[in-house]
Length: 406
Ligand SMILES: Cc1cc2nc3c(=O)[nH]c(=O)nc-3n(C[C@H](O)[C@H](O)[C@H](O)COP(=O)(O)OP(=O)(O)OC[C@H]3O[C@@H](n4cnc5c(N)ncnc54)[C@H](O)[C@@H]3O)c2cc1C
Image (tube, rainbow, N blue to C red; front, side):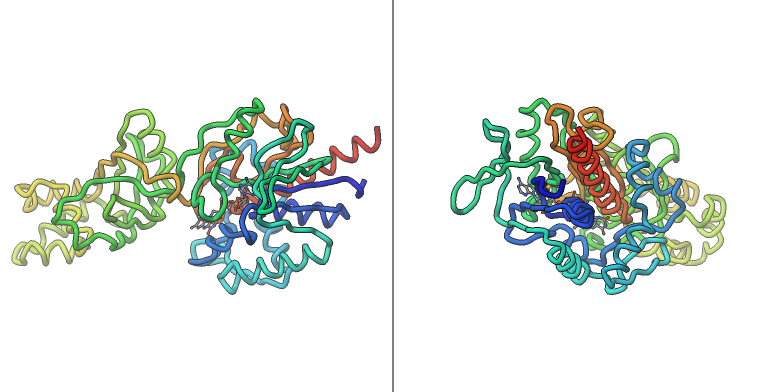
């Protein structure tokens, strides 16, 4: 079976993990990558500290994904502990941060990627950079554009791990959507996820842009279903940051259906409205600025309340408290997909069999962010990319074993 031609296209988290599994099984593997070097988004993810996975209980972990039923068997088969074990095997230790997020001890992605590539090389994995996949030839081979011209590559099984559609400069440009759609593959449109949203601020708020709103919570819609305590940053275009990313799915859905959305913030989630009213009324002898500051409404929080509450209500503790505990931020758009941390949409579950093989393209498997799942930041994106890479690789092994046995 190991004389079969296995081709992986896309050398990101999913593609390299598929190469890892297949080469460990003794298979001969070729990885093709459009960029001059591999793992560019993975390296970018490591810039501010590589949050590789999360340590929360598995039931909570799985619930973070919109397609949790689909992803459950994949993640259970390569779960956060397995990710930590895999890193450990590469000589990279990890730790759990105070938020439960898991990071390599060195924080960066580069040392991990270096060791990973070296291990793949030792197992004979061949990496071909500057090969841009364009689709299939009339004979069914894989077509690549290279500096030397077009090249066709035959395969027994291939795994497409082409990423989503954000940060195109790092390689995942989403152009595969057209290629696969022409082959009858059903794909949900690629949309920005974990992205910023557009809001219009008055000149008054300008000095506060770029500053974080810390220890807040937020939700979307009438119910407080989506609350998550975190922080957000007001920007020249609107608002971004962990809290906004965590709510990007319901916000996106509201914008797609209604053209606009409202993000609700609780600027002081650790105290009740009643406690806040007491704080705002008890220091009547102080100036308003001082009273607000003592109540926790200094800096950007106070500025946001002034921005969103009519001036004639600033001295009314009840109105201020009500706005602080339920501060509606009108949003009128999403930031472009290229600036999003990840992409929602992609190849739909129904287009694939239980091993992630495309139903319309036998022996062509898919993995990673190009599949139609969505999750917040927190290590969930890389975990599902790795896990689906492992799953597709095992799917290839099953398929090839079945073919060899026939
Ligand atoms: C700024 C930033 C920070 C992030 N931080 C985190 C984080 O801390 N934790 C986390 O879990 N996730 C994070 N992510 C998300 C995470 O990096 C991605 O979800 C993950 O890399 C997706 O892996 P993938 O293998 O599916 O796709 P990618 O990593 O995008 O890999 C796809 C590969 O396919 C190649 N390719 C695409 N098209 C072609 C083609 N036609 N021919 C040949 N090759 C092609 C690309 O060049 C690329 O190398 C972050 C993302 C960004 C942008």
